[in-house]
Amino acid sequence: MCPDRSTSTGTSVTSDSQPGRYRVTLRFTADDNGPAASGYWTDPHTAQRAYRSWIGTHGSTTVRIQLTEQTARRSLVLASWTRSTGEVTGCPRGHQRAGSG
Image 1: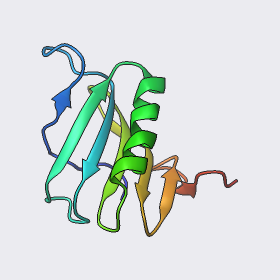
Image 2: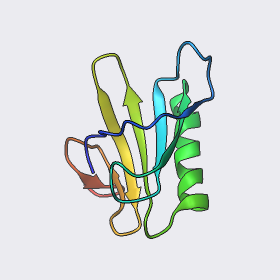
Image 3: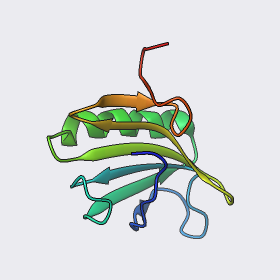
């Protein structure tokens, strides 16, 4: 689901005062209000590895995993995964599946 409207709190892997720009969120239910866990990274490659790792270790029929870029003005979904849709990238513009187009 794009854009990210999640309000969950997460564990920061950067300094406590300044969370990283890239956030990976693991939502345990399809409902946006369900329980979730998040991590923040400053490096986009590290965040991408975490996103892929979480798909491999936590991917199930009920979870949604998202990689977002956080700025002061917006939250842009870079990639989202569910078992039913697979990976969708380029959200909110395009809504294309990874590897397509």
